[in-house]
Amino acid sequence: MSSSHASSLRQSEPLLPPKSLKEPVEPLSPPASTAIKVLSVVRIAVGAAFTIAPRFSFALSQFPIPAAYAFMPRLFGIRDLALGELLLTAEDKNSPDGGRREIKRTLWAGIGCDLVDVAAVAYGVANGTLPKPPALIIGGGAIAFIAMATIGMRGLEKEKARA
Image (cartoon, rainbow, N blue to C red; front, side, top):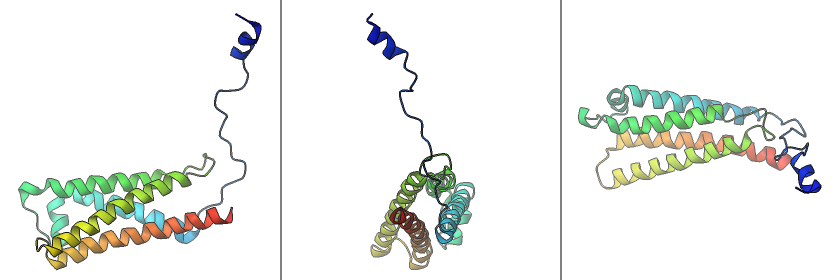
């Protein structure tokens, strides 16, 4: 073994440089922080309700679900539980960007899901399979989630512009 090869094996530097904060990350603006926290908590609450009591939860939106189809609201519930939990835990004060990248990814995932929900509701109303009262409640909820995510996203973008 050559001496240059042996010395390269005994490097004192790690293979990957450590992640360190060059500058402290500024906290999110109050409106963005509030919107993100409210969105995560509401997603978790809605997700838990749809998962634990699917028929009751959907009945509140004036859309009764037969017992044989109770698994369907649970699919939405698990999705919202996962998105809410990811958003709640995305902030990482030890990462160089404070977890901003993960927050944005989670917000975009939620926006994508909510846009599909709005499209499905519109399709259901258009073909007559979804009555208007539950469509307004379900579609309105998805639009409210999109609005809160947009407020959070704008707060993240404003910080990026300041940097």
